[in-house]
Length: 384
Image 1: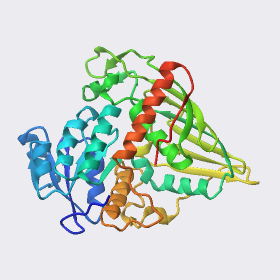
Image 2 (image 1 turned 90 degrees about the vertical axis):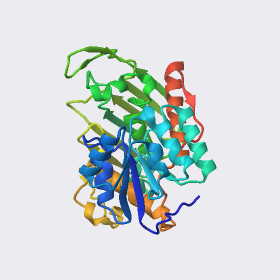
Image 3 (image 1 turned 135 degrees about the horizontal axis):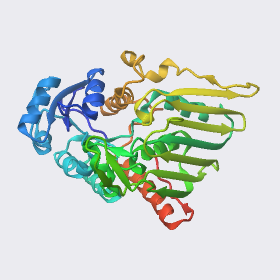
Image 4 (image 1 turned 180 degrees about the vertical axis):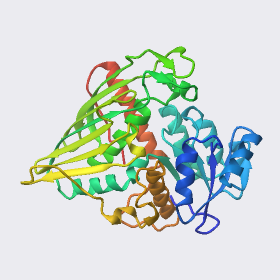
């Protein structure tokens, strides 16, 4: 389906959850939109009139609303970006879809598969374009990595291994993130760090055919960094998944809660003709700068592989800003803009939409089921 802005090529954005006190919307979405042609940050909504007004003044947003429903009904908003905590996605995305607005939702789409399915079904019935914030798919280094693999840099892929720290699931927490201690929140080590990571892996190498999994909560009690109070935690802090990809390659992923002094993120792809490595210096690797390394044939040592300029998609203003949280988000917004305006190149895949999010949610539920059952599970094709 194709959606176009009624305001021509200028896409007017309303952000649900932009706060004067900061947060992901302020650190990623605002600078991403400011650094792109074709968008205008036109409106925002917050929990109260006062908080909405404060955010509007801080970020120079002309229209402010005290509810997502009011924002969705505004005739001056074409695209609604929902950047709030996962447990509130359903109630805040639904009004935008019912108003027939395009929606960009942060990942995860819902607190569980059922919520994601409800939102995707509503979007389909309303015939609106949707996007979900799996921004690693838009990152220039990973798009280059996918092409390297497809072009035979490593030959036939034999195996891949990914080791990461999730930040979520550490020994401490603060009041802003108390909700992630509850596995029912939908904001867990499995859904967020692992979810972003497995989506990137499958974008580059293809989907899993079968998986085995271990999911453990080894820190059932955690400490508040401010008060020192001890709280119960039901969410997982260790995930180990092994499996076979549809290509036949063997895959292993291990994500640890919190952070590690040793390895923040390391991803290897090993093939018959060479090896590729992706590294990052932060736990939430999909929000920061990535470095690619490779060697093949008779080359004895890995060398860094600079990303060709064409993968920046002419976004020259972002060339030296790869370490910023807004970098990958800006590239996803640029891809979405081209999709909305009908300017997407024939050989380019658009942004992941709500249907894709449902397939990824379904895969994560199957991973959790494999861990509960203690056995290998065969997966149906999930990604796009």
